Length: 253
Image (tube, rainbow, N blue to C red; front, side, top):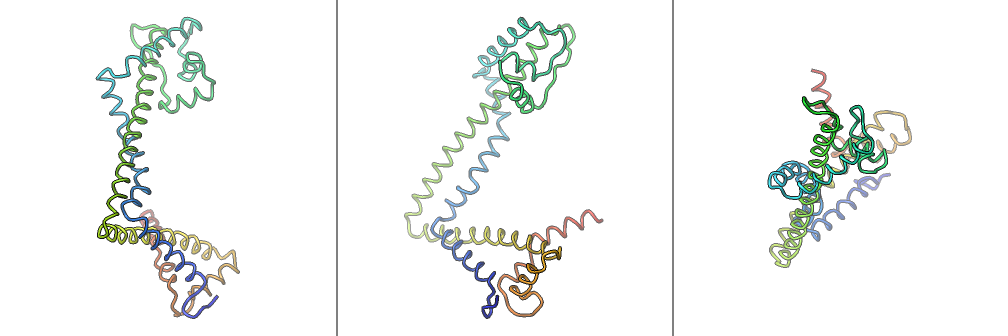
């Protein structure tokens, strides 16, 4: 379609841009950053430091002794009741020792890194299951507890910062600056999203299978002419296309 210097895609792009600007200004930079990236950040942080925090709790004898004692008792009951004669898998120990169904036991084993029992000099099968099993299961649970603890603490902190940011926006100067930065952020995210859509469109067009779609793109964006189109620049100078060419070039060296 042709609306003078605009095509249908241009109009859709401009409508989306206006929405992004208004959303960015009224939402603000601080709140938008916290909402969009804060949750991901605390997930990554909690995952990265869960193991170290678990070891810290273990060395301080916090929670760990009780968990270890409980696992030891369960494993002792398993070895007494089932009297294993060979090295069983962790999934079997979890299933039989703790009374869980086999699929869940397999998932737990996978989350633990698929460990397996290994012989230790001077220890029989009974001792191996109790010592190794209790240790590995206990530290795995400690890591999970540490992850949840760090996540909740950081989530509370995140919500507090969000409330503070909302309070700061009551000041007119801060609200204007925060709104302006919010506009820049939202426009940047919008351009990146549009570039991704255009990249997919280009892949379809280059494939040459959908003739009607290709004709629409060529006409609406005026790709085969020198006519002005706002979205033509984003389509032709696509960041994803440059990234693809860079990666392909690296592998072709």
